[in-house]
Image (cartoon, rainbow, N blue to C red):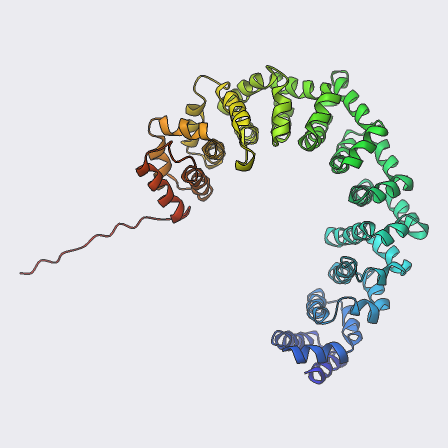
Length: 504
């Protein structure tokens, strides 16, 4: 097999006709698809891949892609790291190839090596290769730039890689990319923040590099869009304990809170407030008590936006409130604010009944997060809280949700059913469902659902009811719930008619 393959590849180098070459590649691909272990081992030991690399100079993009696919298969036969050890100079050239598919092929091979802690040391001494990879972070092809960024993130997660990441020519290459344009500079910042959040040492090294300070400075710029992008990246750093502490030490959080407090003074604040909301929402989801106790102005601003019903930023405020409420600690922190949460829930009830469709859906999605409590975390205290919040929405909150579940529009209907599924997983919600006229029949009626996503959402409601408390519904209803759940979301009942042919 190795000999056959060698002859075919030699023939590729002899031919000039691209169509003939494509035919040979097709033969090779078919053969490679049926290799046994012994043949694969022979190929890995004896085949010179260099002859195939030479074919990547073709101007025919389709042919070059075919060669890449064959090489990808052959790379998979070799032991991890063998391609780099045998063809390091060729890989260095492929990284700067004119065809993005070829650049991507080489970078993915390097990524597979750096992702293995046993093999990464092979690459760490190859400064020229690493510089070439860093430069590809600025590539015009998003596929290529993402892969290059992933390689540098992996290197930054490895202790030995971290020692060289921000030194010498590598450091200078990162710095040059920062001056290229805003899109490329944020790709670099994304790598830096990923390294910073990966370990305490990574944070210290990223701070020493000066790149984190450069990112902080963007928050002081006049460009609102750049500030929003910086906030999005920094929110990832704030999700780690060390990262949050570092941002506090550098007074980044204090300055962001100040921006929220001074929002009314800046006519462009409506553009920045959603970014600030998302930032603090992400952080508060993980560290609710810290944010609520240290930065009450953020929480006040969140509720002010919801109360004002300013539609330009209301959606983000609803999303943020949902994120803050995800964990029990967040729910208790919100409860401690007194009447703020019941008041916000009354506003959410208005939103999901009267506002434009996109906001109604975001309101329902936020409500689902606010009320949701996973089974293992349910106790009397948290269930009492979610029940009181639901009851505070309006005079007939379940009627409001059921009405939305009966809407003829798939998006609203699905979002309503998702809230109903949250209620169905809590004992008080099961009791509400059991006593609501006609609701059980509606849930068990498959014929009223014509949308795939709504069938699946309704199935989730019934499945949770089937797994609920045994004494809420009568035994026959529980049996029907379990039967519905066992049949799956897309079950279709086939009615059989027996035709009787009369004789004459």
